[in-house]
Amino acid sequence: MAETMLAGPRQTRSLKRDLARAERKRKRNAFLLVLPLIVFVLIFFVAPIAGMLERSVVDTDLMETWPKTAEAVRTYDWEKDAVPDEAVFSALAQDLIRSYDDRTAAAVARRLNYDISGGRSLVMGTARKIARLDQPPASWRDTLIETEPDWGRAETWAAVRRAAGPLTDFFLLQTIDHQRDIDGSIVPVPTERAVYLQIYARTFAIALTVTLLCLMIGFPIAFLLAGLRENLANLLMILVLLPFWTPLLVRTAAWVVVLQEHGLVNQMLQFLHLTNGPIRLVYNRSGVIISMTHVLLPFMILPLYAVMRTVPKDYMRAAHSLGAPPFTAFRRVYIPQVMPGIAAGSILVFIIALGYYITPALVGGAADQMISYYIAFYTTDTVNWGLAAALGTGLFAATLILYAIYSRLVGGVRGVM
Image (cartoon, rainbow, N blue to C red; front, side):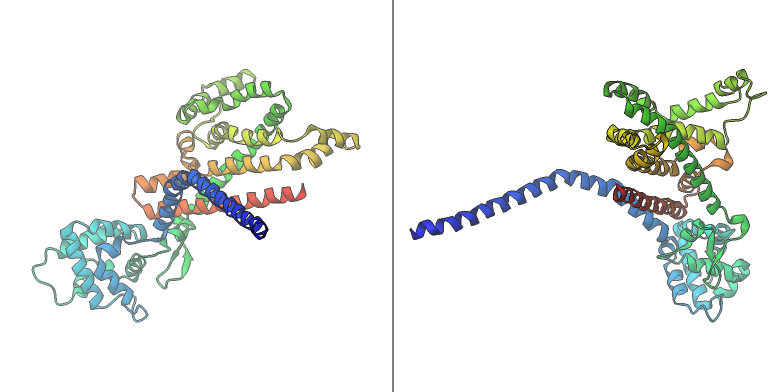
């Protein structure tokens, strides 16, 4: 009798252990299933972004090539004089001679050239001249200033201090058209060098215009498809997805042909007597917006269609039966329900448009290039990876802000619903 009474609690504990063991096994199997995806995201998404963020603030070219100069610059009391003493010049001379012999002075020359005009000539010219000296001079300070008078300027040494690393805000400040002066204060760059805020504004204006056009064109198409029978809607959806079957470069090149002065668009405009002659639609802002709108339109239609298919038609009929005019029912009942699709499509198109490169590069003019063009330029042509990474960081920050706005917008809509 006593054994029978104890068997109940034992069986209960055994059942709990079995359930806990099964739950742990289920979670472990689920984790192992998503582990490849986690590894893929870490390697091919998180690591490149982390590397880009690091590049935008880490500056070690001068520190690695001229270690004595970097250490001397960091320890020198700059409040005494903007041009350092003999100890710093002596360290500079030793690093110059060694880096010239090792053929590594070009890295520092390129880094200083980012900051001061003629920085490359200053470094290479000085290194070449002092490497030919037979004996060390009595004063490296006087010798270097006599060899290259720019070494006696406070601006030159301010640039050396900014490049001494290992961390710097030099590249990030450049992307917002600011810099540090001799005293270390943040000031605007001269007007002739203030270009990046204008480029950012142009990039955001083009992306916003393309997003609005995609929404204006894509919403009626998605609304029409969502109201059709499923088999017919799937058939017409092929037309929406058809551009994905063609390489982007081919589509962009096709727009160059279609939009040129003797292209199809100009011929139609003249045939319909809408224009007296050919108008320029390519290699300018119009061509960029038209071609980008065409390329990105499916990214607006697909989220809209996916959300519109889930909206019950009974809601609109109920609003009509309660006396709501068609526009009021559409605005007060339908739009709030498809707002997640509008937000998802808009944010998707806008973010893709922000980083677009090939279409503006081929269809746009010199004044229509977006920030991606300059990132590619600094990466491949001038090898200024710090500035390229800083410009990319700006786009990344904009993307995070837009995602926060999207989350708030969708959350707000759900809250209303």
